[in-house]
Length: 403
Length: 168
Image (cartoon, rainbow over all chains, first blue to last red; front, side):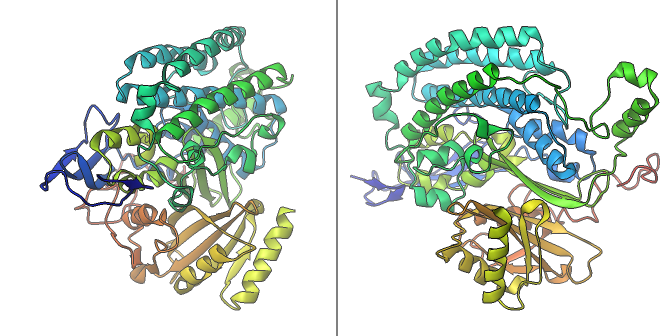
């Protein structure tokens, strides 16, 4: 029998002694994205896997070198498209750090609400898809309804659903409207019950547990070496969370727990994400209840578009409008790194500015790209069906992987 | 607090590697040092294994190109993070373009593998000792390194668009 220990193949006993090459992907219905793996398999047992990535590489870093700051936000949408708002706001905060903008408390709380909604949407997709891959389609259909409701809420805030381009440098384009608040409150009331039902469907389900426990494990030490962050790292037992370690956007004001797993296997990743959804709900409740009064954007006229009405009536507003749209606002030269806790881990923006209208260099630290390289080590020695589960539980998003 | 830690770390580095910390600054509170490319592994492994500083996490690794800096055109930027001290730092090493070679970090951090492949893919930096230095995001038969500044994003033969007024 083959015994796996931390992803390492301990025994090399073969099943039928014949090694076959299996080309999994790039467009395989089980991989949820454009991933290719050339696997050497012995029967069902994986001997080695070699991922090929870059199928949807769109050269965002190069494009960003020619785009004014405001026009880079839509590029960030298309990285982790399951939680675009987090990417958008991470980018806004990076620019705000560079220009030294002071944000009103209200903006930060509004951002927290949107970012936590995005995290919930992302985790719902990931966890319900783990269900699908183990053969439980029902939970997925129900949780996708809830994700739709989150998208409806985005729509109230920014008008878009998937690639949101939500918010602006300096705040939001408009305040939360009453419909959004109404929808959010209604959703906060009805979602937990449905979510707990979903949780009951899988979390302590014997069939599910037998299927996912010990599938694709990684030790905390290896995970750190591989640059894991986010739920995947926490599932391996390391309590690193950017929201706590380097708080941004007033995360220090809220009370929430960081769930931590132990074995770093598919089950732990599932449970950590489930618990994070509950913690996100806690944060949203706190932010909504204590939502401060004030403006929905910072006082940075050089970067924040003025009201259209003002553009027609006030000279200054017209000048600022022109300069922002043409990308002629001077920014300080310097270099800045800002990271946010994306749904998949530490999403970092390293930007070098030379004072020009565009970044001199912009590098995205994409959590998926960094942790996906551990995949061959995690699936080595496991069976093919576990490899599918491992990939979906790592929540590798093709857009973020390839940038 | 953060400034104090940064200063102490910088002092420790300067004490241990005299003359090898070519430049140091702290833009936006983020300690940034420049080191000679030949010493990258030595300095980073010292930081990684040091009991007090314990830079246990490689956050990021990327390249950068300054065509005007003669003899130092191509750079590699490392972002390290010490969970114990919650301290981040940035290390840069610059190389001449015709000899863009630096030692690999894959021996210290497994995460460096793909990040170095990405950096090679975009900037053509040779990471000596890397186990599998191939292109990662671009197609294998590409014959140039696209993030270098000489490759303009748009078609240079176009005459209807001018950058005269609106920057790069």
